[in-house]
Image (cartoon, rainbow, N blue to C red; front, side, top):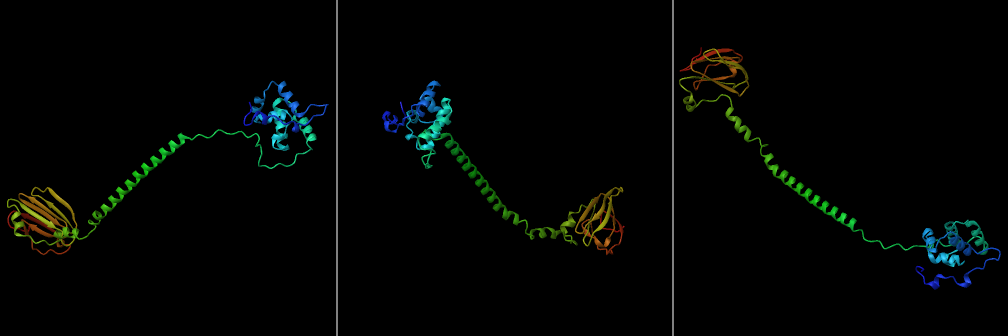
Length: 282
């Protein structure tokens, strides 16, 4: 059975078959005899050379009109000769002698048109389509989540703006430091708060920094260090408190809730002792 043509179309016409010389076989007869000697069928030759079956039949009948031109006829002769195991050069020389020498140029458009094999229709690639759809869904979900995180971060940043601006306001802080202003005036409640069965000594560095030292009645050291300006220390004992002021002019003293009015000079070192009852300078 032939492919694409009716049996009548596949058979060469009598007027197109060249007659070979009596002393040598024709090209088609030589190819056909070589194929038979090689034990090959037309179908096998067509499959190995990719030359369509109708064209193989036509060439074996010396009908080269279906080749599409002399150039393609020469190519088919060479291909078929190699497929059946004979030398193509004598056949090509015979073809040139019988068809006017070198072939005329042939347009490139019908190149191998005669032996073009129809490809099967391409089936849709469902696997690739499914993979593309999954990738698109993942990308959409990732983009949505990323956008949501950015929105939350932006809202958090915008919500944090007013809270950070409030502590930056300098007004509340000075209000908390003002009560620590030096030279406090003791009130009646402060005097009443001092226990009467103990001696209470408060030292405040009102006008500058000063080194101070304080001991109880047993000579145990209660404090030995520097008071920065604005700082204060309070000491208590059941009997007495001994203090040393490195810069008496820079501090203020409060004994048992009462301010000591002595006028100490800046840089003056004072050694003082206070007991229960009214303040006394020792």
